[in-house]
Image (cartoon, rainbow, N blue to C red; front, side, top):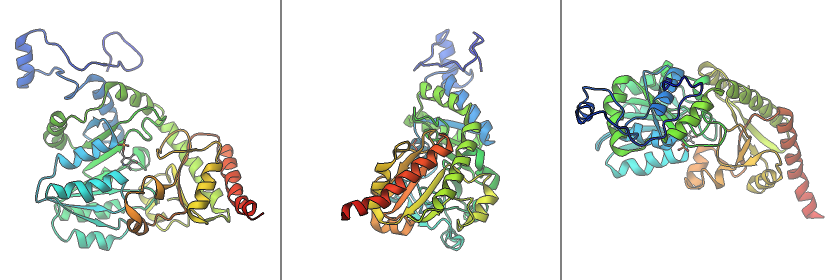
Length: 385
Ligand SMILES: *Cc1c(COP(=O)(O)O)cnc(C)c1O
């Protein structure tokens, strides 16, 4: 959508409000008989361009962009839910999504239940009771567990539930949850959409009716709106998404294979590898294995810290989906607050490392990982000297 000056790049409408030709036009706009932008909390032309593009990319009828991924998850859930409702969620969720389900929703009289996402019988048991909403993430953070989208959507719909899928790890390029029956898809645009570590953002995608009747009034009146500047940056990021994500996936697959050869590592998790317990399901619903690799280092936290501190090219960060490769120790950062018992249930060990593989030359990434693993092996020997 061009502004009238025939610009090449999308125009950035960095404005909080809009003016009217007349008092009558303002009245007509608020009455809904005339379409005119009013206030950037309700809508903004740059944000609308981002929303249109994200809807087209997902194949969804409608989209609303939000300030962060968590604002998207929160708005998708709280716009729809009320006291007395019931939510069933996969246990392996992004930390803040887990907090919303375990801690926030019960405060408002919403019953919640977690199930192991990979266990279809557990889903069937939980969804034998009517439910209002199902929230799941696949592949999950950080253990890259796969949820059978079609099977869970069918069970959820029989229970009367709306299915919300957090599709951050797959991106719309690798997996389109609506094709398997998902009703709502949410993203953190902070991750692959921007993909260059600059801005926070999020979005919610769904049917035109749900977005307009349920989500829009919630966003309009509670204000999780994205800045037009951030929307503009994410628009620019989307222009290269189809080049960045496949290249990152190729790097990640090569890195996973390299790590699996190393004796310092107990196991490697990558959805498209032969040794991933759900490889078949991953291949059935995703078109590539993703940009993340998770692995368990022998020697626990100590070995992980030595390994991460020895990295030279790869940075230590809890972010992901960036063009720079980033290493995370979930047990002491992103998943510290879920507690040891829940970590054990999720399979997150003290030796678990999550690697978000970036766009650097794959030989450089592999060299850095190799020298850092060599350093892990070398360190105890030095200590013993
Ligand atoms: C990062 C992330 C979020 C939250 O997004 P923010 O933009 O950080 O608020 C939610 N879900 C998943 C899977 C994520 O990776």
